[in-house]
Each structure stands twice: as structure tokens, then as C-alpha cells.
Image (tube, rainbow over all chains, first blue to last red; front, side):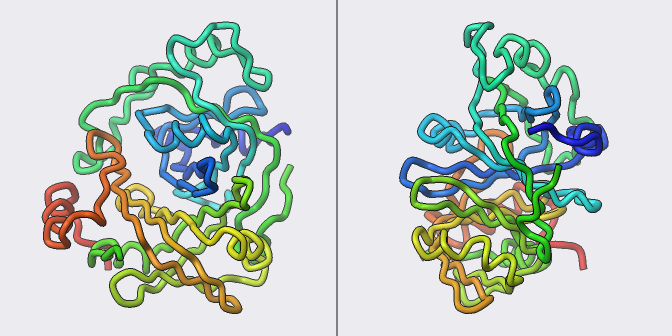
Length: 159
Length: 136
């Protein structure tokens, strides 16, 4: 599913004018895991990428059950979006030609495999800034459906 | 039973949560509730809209374990994740928190906090964040 222009232009790290998101994944035993992610971007018009900074449970869950939801957390500014679809972590060392729902691993890693160098989080206050940014791959979600999480219109499809 | 710290309660109550749910097959649905209340040491409750109830009630009935992650500015300042068993009574969703994790990026990511004594959690929070809760 293609994202609209507003989504594509605002899917950026918060320091670049975008927003923080939460990523929900689910274990094989159906236990959800929901964590905040700061480094986010659109990749083409049907994929969203997030830096994998050793998100331990997320990795286990995606290995077991490759699906996720990304929800906009802050600042919302009317962007009540939830993006859901197949999700994986494209790891450093993956074959360049590995294809994940229409994107090549090599293309994703070359563009977003070293997020800290590309977009250093210089705006982050010292008490919440990670002491070291180590990235082992790129969490990649293919957008299959988009719904509004706005409480009174929850579930409304957006396109 | 997990024990929520005063800092956790403050951020949860002020900004609410993203609530991750899943059906028995592991297909996720997340809703966002922008305010919460806490009860006792471990319960977080939310007043849901009808649309929110309709969206997650099947998941809660068949798979009540949910994940909570603080919303809005709390997604940055209050890097916690809470997991527990949810019950839905009308429009009220109650979550009895069983697990608490620090999700601050870096070496303490995924550190489990509910297994620490409460006084250790408070010391941990004081050493990691400058605030003791959301701004008044």
C-alpha cells in the first residue's frame, strides 16, 4: 500500500522534523512488545525503516512472527497513523540481493545502515541521549494497511 | 506482582499509552489512549471509546496479555514498557502489570525493573533521568 505525500514527507527522525514512533511486534506465543523508536524514515513509498539499535525482544519476535505495527507517538500534530504489515530486520551481512517485499537488503543498508553518521541525534538532551549508537541492521516494515488510531475514529482506513 | 514507581505513575497518568494487543495467532493491533489512571501498586486503567473497545475486545477476550508504552513526550522521557494481563469491563480497560522494562536506548535497554526492589528502581531512575515525573 502506498503512503500519501504527507506521510512520506513527515516520516523522519524527530531531530529532522519528524516524530518518535512505537513499534509493536508479537512473539510466537502471541505476547506483544511495544517500544519507542527515534530513528525512522520512509524508504520508497511502501516501506518504513527504523534503526535497529539492538532491540533485543523485537529481534526475537520478528524472527518468530514477522509482522509489526508502527504508531506515531510524538509529536502527533494530527498524524494519527498506524502502519501495519510484514516486518523484518535486515542485518549487516545479509546478501545485497535479498528481497524483502520489494526492497533489496543492500539498498536499505547502504542508505540507512549507519544512521548515527547520517543523522546524528544532536538535539537529544544529555539525560536521554544514548551513550553510544551501535546499529546492527535496519528494521523494515512493508506497509500493508494504514489505519487511524485517533480514539473516536479508530480503525478508519487511511490512504 | 510488579510495583509501579511514582515516576512511572506520573508519566502514565498524564500521557497515557500505546497499547499493543494481539490475537491468538499473533496478529497485532495497537490503540492509543491519551490518559490513564493508576490504582494501587500495579494496575493501570484506561477509559476507552466505543471504537477502541470494538477494535480490541476480541483480542483481549482471547489473548489478554498486552504491552503498554508511554505516549506523546513520555515516549521520549519515560522510556518504559509495561506488560500485563488486561480485563475489559464495558469501556474500562484494566491492566495488571506483571513486567516492567527500561527501554532507554543504550546498555540498559530491556533491563527488567520489576525484579528489582522498589528502592533500587527509584535509585536507578534518579541516576538516569533528571525529572521525577512529567512537568506540572
